[in-house]
Every structure is written in structure tokens, then in C-alpha cells.
Image 1: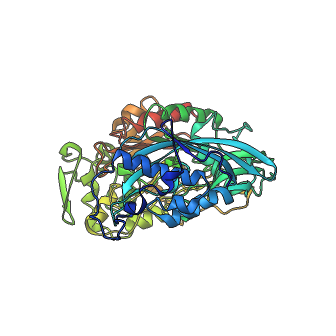
Image 2: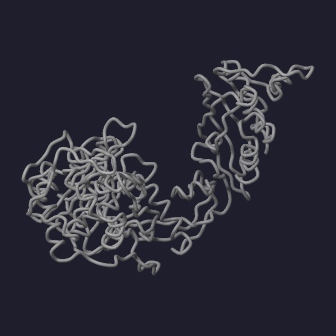
Image 3: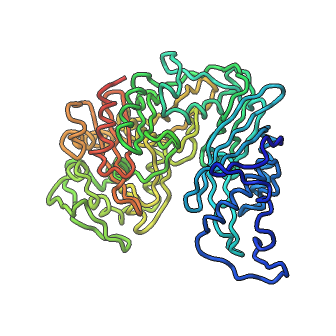
Length: 538
């Protein structure tokens, strides 16, 4: 690495090379004679924070990765990543400017040049480090995480400059218009996923770029490589998606009105994904989230109970205030009860105990099989064109089995999954959703092994229609009938004051689902988002 300026600028004052060995032997917890000192505890001091940060940043700037790494809590990981900063990322003329510390946290800015095979580009970004005490001896060290080097890095990721391993792609909507994050801020991760999947096959040519190359943990979490700086443009290939420009624009507007909101719209007759949006533009909760779906899961559970002869839409069904199963006492919202009511009434009002009361009559794997065999969920075999999660419905017993019936326990879904559930009810057949036509790359779509009987399907549609007209979804779905159906949900989350609000519904040849995390009841939070998109049509 070529070190541009030897001293790191700290709060406007240069911290010189003496900080590279600042503290001497005493910094290692020993006296000059080698005797052990008492391990220091408590918060790091302002002087320790500034000195440690200066020592680390100065060594990094001078291109001495081993020396910089020695000032961190994980010398091996830090040394490897910092060495790659020059060798693999081809970053030179590095200048690091320290900001004002706050406690043990020290912000700093980075100026550097990315240079590769005769082309170069300036790079500027902000980062931060935190100084903590090392457990072994109490010495102040930089708490090591890859994000110290660049905020887009997760532990295990690396920075690489070179010919991009994957050519860029130009993504198009269903009408042939260009998809950009300027127009659709939610679609950054979708565009990254499209490039990763189709960049090599869409006819483009790679350019030269600095990018984040994801490690095993990041890939397992569904994260794609990310471009940080483009030194020379490649020639993009073209990938057409199923996204509707009008619905996508509407979805972006709707989720922007609430924090942590996500929504997906699909076409039941084909499985095409027409819109995907998240109010937070980082992790794609809409397609990759893994959240308890709450009472929207009762759509699947109701189909199971009707199939098993344990419930029927217009027959009387118990809905007590509470019901104990597996040692857990389950409650309805505000401990309401319905005396002498039908299963349809219980479904429409989202009575938990109406479902929990049937747990003892079900096998442990019944719900799992229903989700997999009828709704195509939880088999890890969806191929929609970008990374996605197709739900989890593990086999459980006792109280956890009962909790799963109402979308808690180990059940995990996202808006894509629950939009697909509504679409399956609307069309009568599971059609795996997709964002890019399978004809593009001849991939195989997931299929369900069976469909619901005509009687069960008719009753399930009746339950959802009644919920939309007269139940917990009525306010959100007002004016959208009569060819419609809906189900609300609220999912409790440990340590969270308000539950996640869920809503799934269909109208005509559209199905949609949304979640507002920590938003409260689904009918009040996610419901208006979903209903607005169904009303718009597409």
C-alpha cells in the first residue's frame, strides 16, 4: 500500500507515528521488569480511546496491517482483511481522518484511490470503530468487526477490485421499462439478486469494479455481492421481470408511510410477482424475511381442520375465552368468547381458542404436511429468480404444536409466502410465485402434491370473504367486494411492545400480503397497505 500521509488526523490534531507503539510494555499489562499488573476493568477512558484508535488508524494508513491488527480484539481476522485492503481491493493513497469520539466509539472518514490496470477512481466513505477492554488483561483494543474497514462488510466478507465476476444487468419491468433504485428504492437487493443469478447468462460483459464479496455467513443469510465503486462500465445484459410499474410505484408509496413495512403482490392465475416493497431499503423482508405470521396462518390451519372434519364453516364451533394445551394457557385477544357461534364466526373474529381446542385431535406433522402438500410451502424448493425464503412449518408437539396452529411457535413466513397462500385459495391451485419467467433459464418451478377438495376450497373462500366483509378485515377491505377474501394477523415477538401486524387478501386476479413489524393489529397497519394495492389492480 502507498501511504499518502503518515499521521492520522485526530480531531484536527495529527497523531504521529509514536502511537504505533504507544503505551510500550505497560500497554500489555506488564511493568518494564515483567511483573504482572492488575487487570484493569471499567469503561475505557477518553485517553485510552484516542490513543488506541490513533495507533490502529495510523498503522492501517501506513500499510502495516499486522501492526494495525495487533491493536484489535481479533488480530488474525483483522490482519487478513487489512492486508487485502491493498492487495485485493487495490486501495492506495489512504488517508484516515478521525472524528469526535463518543464514549468508546470513534467515527472516522476514509479517502483512498482504487487503482487497477491503468484505471483509477477516488473513494470516500465514513466508518467507525469502538474501543473496548480486552477480557484477558484489560488492555484497550479496537473491537474487531469487518464493518470497521467498510460499513457494508459483514464478518467473513472481503473487498475485491478487478473485472467484476458477474456482468451487470439491465432489469426491465413487464412493460419493458428500466428498473432502477432511483425509481424504486425498495428494489436494490432484488437488482443485486438478478445480477448474481443472470449476469453471466444475459449477454453482458463485465466491467472493473470494487465490490464486497460475501462470505459463507452472508451467503447463508441471503446477501448478494455488492458493488462499491465502478472503475469502468461493463455492458449490461437484459433481464425482464414480471413487475408491474404501476403496482410497484404504488407499493413503494404505501410502505413509505410506515416504519418496517413490507408487501408483495402476486397474480394467482400465473404466480407472477407484480410488486415487492419494503420501507427499509436494506434487508428484503418481503421476499427473504422469516417471521411468525400470526393469525394469517389460520388460513392454512382452517383448511386442515375442514379437511379432517374437525370444523365446518356454518357448523357450531367452540370459542372459549381461554384453552389450555400442553401446559400452556392460550388466550383470545382481550379474552373474548363466542357462545354458540359457528366456525365462520370464529375465523372472522380470529378466535385463537377455536383452533387451539382442536390440537389434541391432530397428529404432530399434520400442519406441516398441509403447508407443504397443498400450499407448496416450507420445502426449500422455490426458484423465483432471486433469493427468497419459502417458509418454515416444522413438526412440533405439545404446546408448540398448538401455537403453530395460530402462526406462532416455530412457524416462519414472509409477505411473499402469505401472498402465495391467498393466491392458492383464490385460484384453487398452488402456483409457485416467480419474478423472472422460468422460460428465461428453463428452471423448474415448485409444485404442490395435491389440491384442496371442492368442498374445503369453497368453505375456505367463504371464511375469507366473510372476514373481509364482516370480520377483522372489514374496515381495510371496505368497498372492494364481493369477489374478495382476507385474513388479519398479529404475531407476538419477545421483547417487543407491539406485535407484528399481518394482512393477506385477494381480489379478482390479485393476491397480496403485508407485514408492519411492531405495528400492532394487522387490520389497522398492514391492512390498508394491502387493500390499497388490491384496489389499484393491475
